[in-house]
Length: 208
Ligand code: TMP
Image (cartoon, rainbow, N blue to C red; front, side, top):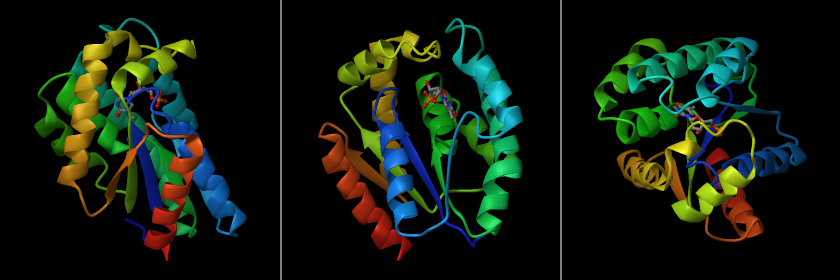
């Protein structure tokens, strides 16, 4: 893993507000003169954006959990090769809206009991972990309503319903305990500004 730049990820269930917070942190670090690249998964490179369309649109049962793992990992590999690693080598702080923790939770825990497969593929094909991860923890009912209200046309996972979003929320909380050295579980049931301030403070402490 190239070490010149720092790699920060945002995670959480659909409608958790993590994209707003990722953008806010990027702006805050940039305003301090730090070179920042804000990116997202699935996507973040032209090839991975093409794979994204296959994953987030259409019927919930369109792909099995196993096929999803392969598609998300293919998209991640391209994103890593074309976008994330070159930026880290150049000393840029990379902020990604989702990364491998999403696959661990969505496909590895909530869609099925496939964490072993997710981990093996990650070790062989990705092998990179963020330095710092913010998991935005919100009440699943409110988050789902917010996500669906956006009507983005990318609701394949939101359409799996409240029980699925609740399993995801539990999965992300468990993940924060599993990787305590890099994961911060952030209470997302507060104002955007209060969350933004806490994250900016934690990032500043971690980045030095
Ligand atoms: P987004 O709405 O945050 O852009 O993410 C798109 C959807 O893809 C979201 O419902 C979460 C899902 N997803 C997975 O299921 N596994 C993954 O590895 C990633 C990156 C996203």
